[in-house]
Image 1 (cartoon, rainbow, N blue to C red):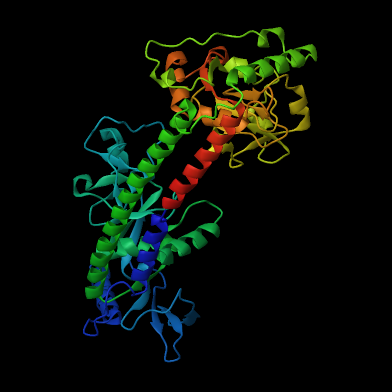
Image 2: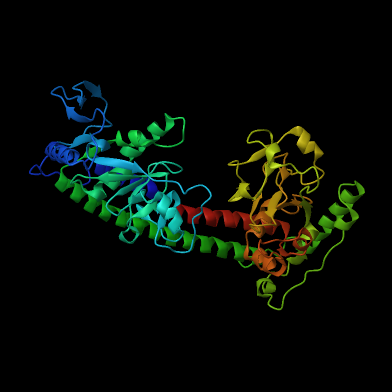
Length: 515
């Protein structure tokens, strides 16, 4: 799969280096553009429309090829620029061509509302894709407007997020002109002839983003300041080339969108193909059957003998020996074509279903940590059939020893029964515990029932149909462990289990290679 985000970043980076659009030697150089901007700035200062910045500066390249910054007090210092620019381009700080002003938080004790009013309030969460998303927009009452009406943004300005998500730039749609602006964003007021779309692209490019990140790391408060934002260096091409760059970027991003759509379609197709192969395998229609294979009925007898042995050793209870006869719906199409050597059984017959400890010893969030040796696994940690260590929390020895149940072993299948129903993964930990939203499916004998076969079952359409029968959740999907024990599974002979797993593995590898 093509990393389209990296591709977008690369295209944008090429544009900011002058390698995306052709150079035209007849273009007015950026140095002349900056001179005109400086003259316009002085005019606006004299008209008292903008304020003169303290010790403002401009950047120039010396005869020695190095870059220098000259300040209003006549001091000059050498500076380091991100990279060399093409002939006719120049580096400039945002302060040389724009002003920045902050937004305002909603007054204490007052709240925004989802009901539409005349006063939209733009939050950082609304600022995406270089525009304002309208689906979750909130509005201010007239009383809020009266208190903070001096902090608005119009469609000629550029927004820049400075807290939460740092450095996201874009413009405000015309219908949201003069909306109230959050304190977590700035409005950049461009008083120069510079192309607004080019400036947005420049602010979203790596050259600006790297500077924002560096500035952000240097401050105690997790927020970009107006001063640090205005000090950011931007590559300035000739005005005519700014327009060409915007056009080329638009073409390039449209092509990337097409790639994303194609990849999305391919992803959906590959997922459907994997599902069809998995379902065919679990129904016994994917592979030829071997009449010499020991049938599943004999396999079940061996499992029952194993359970009797575990019962005598005190490792399972008498109720675990009890079996449930499969209950099928009127529409049993899924099970109609299973081979004669297979058997329909309930899950309880072949696996030990273990709840987590839900009593007084259940560990509170405060007692868990992000480091340790004993993992405490919840639904969030189950990804792609495995237990991810991302966001994984840990118990200490004392907490673990207090738990009466829900302790995992290697090759246990962890299965979600609350919230994200049927989300699952196989444990590679030899020690650990599960959260209350999970149960453990443990094979009585891994040589007889492959844990990987159980994992495949947990991802098949077969289990989806069983979930529809027993899900008793209202606001939140919920499944009782006792109902999970009634789930029907089409059990193949032991040798067929391994053939199924090899076939699924081969097909998935081929599909992933094609992607």
